[in-house]
Amino acid sequence: MKKILLLSTIAALVLLACKPERLVAPGEPVKALSGNWQIIKATRNGADLTSRFDFSKFRIHFTDSSYTIDSLVPFIVSKNGKWAFDDPTYPFQLSFTPTDSSRKSSPLLYPVSAGQRNIIITFSPGCGSNSYQYTLQKAN
Amino acid sequence: MEKQNTQPRGGNRRLGVNDGMRVGGNHRLGVSDETRVGGDRQGGRYGGRVWSWAWKIGGGALLLVIAACSMTIDSVVQPGSVNGGDILPVTLNVTITTNTGQTSNFMVAVLVPKIWNAAKNATITFTSDISSGDQGMTVIPAGTPAPQGGGLDWPTLLANRLGSGGNLLPDYEWVAFYSNSSYSVGGNATVHATVSIKIKTSPDNLSFKLGYCVANSTDGLSSSDRYGSYLNNGCFQVNGTGDLIDFCNPQLANIDPRTSLDNDIITLTFDGGVTPTALDNASSVYLCVSGITDTGDSLSVCEQTSRTKLRSLGLNKWQIDLWPRKLFNLPDNKHLTGLRYYFTDAAGGSKVGYGGGSQPFTYTFKCQ
Image 1 (cartoon, helix red, strand yellow):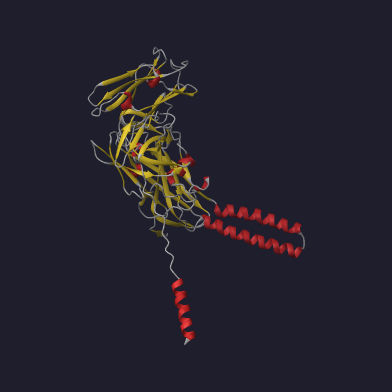
Image 2: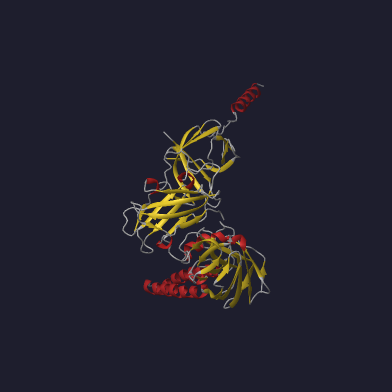
């Protein structure tokens, strides 16, 4: 009887000691755009225009849902307005809705380069056959 | 003749020359075995080496024979010119010679101005000794890897291998088509094919050096004897409307991109090396430009300042990138339909226009 009791106790302890480990996957941070961004690289149909055209003064300032543009260059939009990601966690599209016209969207890349978060957008400000790709980085 | 209704995907290879090469590779393995055995029998390394080299040389020659396959464009029949918007009819006479059996799709590619949008506006059919009636072809979607092309698609591979065909403006493209069916051809066969190409031209006024290439879906452009090409065959003219887009002759001035609107960044290049001009000895060159608006107004920017100064590319070649809307300070409700422009020296006294003369260069803003 004692043996049975002892074995039952050991079995109960063993079973209770086995506790499933709950692995929690690290959460993907929501991508934030807030702040001032500048153009650090620009291409037109694959040709690098960065050093050939003055993009240095262009700034786009993102807040939670709005954006304002200073020193405009050919861009996906030419007026201030609202912006949005298609998915805040895994964004593949960045859309701009100027106050005076309809929404325009760009494919979005969001790489980290040399420790700095970049955003890369692709659009056509003139003819649809001319594709521009701008790489933006936070301005100091 | 065996005909299979299949469109090849890039990289999909059927039985053909390369399979022959693979078989050759197996022979080579056999050679190694034979060499080793021979060496053991003779008990000498020298004999083994001789056998090894003999087999390698013999096997290599055998491979060349097995793999040899030629494809040539014997002649091209095309008009010297058409009117803008008309159909351009072209006939290619092609000979295909095989040394081993192969089942492949036939590939035909054309070198054309991008503005024609040949992927949508061209139809290609062919007749041959081994098929009955007109055989259809379909454009190969961009991005589809070409066989043995290192991952490149057909247009990129053709541009890398065959180039621009002597066209001096960058707005050209290779457009490739596959036969809708694949065809089995026996070894030591000679096949004649007649390819009929019909391309609806755009209304634009242009001159262009057309080009053609034929190949198959197994060999691709893996070596120069596996495909046939026809390039630099003179300057074909389209008598259309608007400014002449001259791909054939060096341009004193040109604007890139060829098609743009006033909200694009455009690049103007002045190439003083093409012909002697009043700016041959200029130490700096400036742009003098008028923008024609959609209401018919003419806005002028003709000054010798930093915003009109071209940068030197050397060898009397000069360039400037500009954003027309900003240059002319256009309000939102105004748009430019075209430009009329000259190049000047720093004093503004020497002015060079079209052909080096006093008439302005012209550019029309439009999309394809």
